[in-house]
Image 1 (cartoon, rainbow, N blue to C red):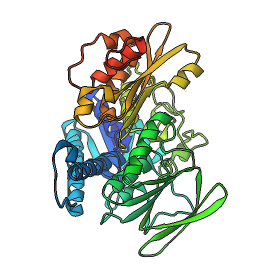
Image 2: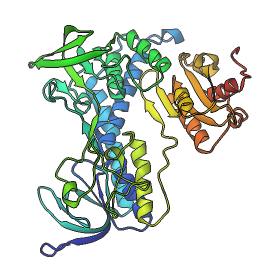
Image 3: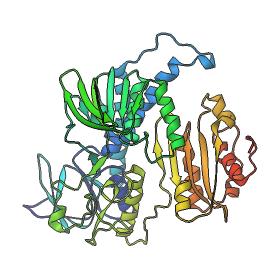
Length: 470
């Protein structure tokens, strides 16, 4: 392919093969571009290999274990329910393998060249790729940077041994007897609750006054209540200060209200956010790509950086660090490169947490809508008023819809309860298409389904609910 040190010419170079990068590569290839994608790790990035997918596989296994233990309400009793952790991990790894194999097939099917290794910019239209065996140069017309993020490592809690990031927490050799979690955000809450369901004694140390800060407190209250059922201790308004570990356990010192405390467990999981991967050997500084004070790449409404032919998407640009946002931005960037007038529109980016119960949100909260000057009406319909939820023995939770009282347009929605992650899609579509409360309420929803709660919540906000007394 290469004679001497000559450059190979391509249309588009994509750096990073996560849910932003590989989607961008596919869309670019669909639009007729000759595409090369490079990643030093597996196709699918953190999400498919060390994040979203493996964590949800383990969470599903934890639900199965819990259901097998507590089926008495249905008249189903199982004795000697046990977890074979090696098979659980085998299931998790199988899910990951299936998904990453699928991405590999998509690359082949779309005639996208894949390079396993790293990239470093030589100029604004040329990059050196390298791994242990080769270091070819590629000349490109356009480049999409999608290098993602990594867990933030705190100096008092360096990763290693029994101090874990989310990556190591998904690959433990055994179910811990005890675990301390620093950070009660979505990663800490999901993984902490998952291990708790498997029997781990979990303590969450959170600096703010609630787990899942950023979600409606009525939602987080239900999550905290369920956490307590499996023995999770939540310590809020706390500051973790230091950790000492040996080959068997780790001891954390923290303070609450000025009082110093100490706790010991098998493992410490640190989940205090993620850092953009813009500070490595990529060479952004060499070609003059502008970053903000947080190390995020500045981009315009098409994902274009200050260098016209270089784009950036996903966790390395401002906004929520979500896989589905990255995929969306990847499509926009690929289309912009092809001359389309596509631009990003962040009107509806759903946020989902796979706790028990699940939480999801889209659009504006009631407070956000009022702060923006809208005249607002809002209401909550309880899962307890829905026949399907009750028949699933999952009556906890609610759907809240926020609407503009002047024209009944749906502005936002929040859901806590079983299948909240799936139910939020209808409300996201409603906001995106400019639907009114009447549009939802007059849409016939199948019975008995959880989807009926969306319809009934709209009726409630309109003022004529059927299955609750207003």
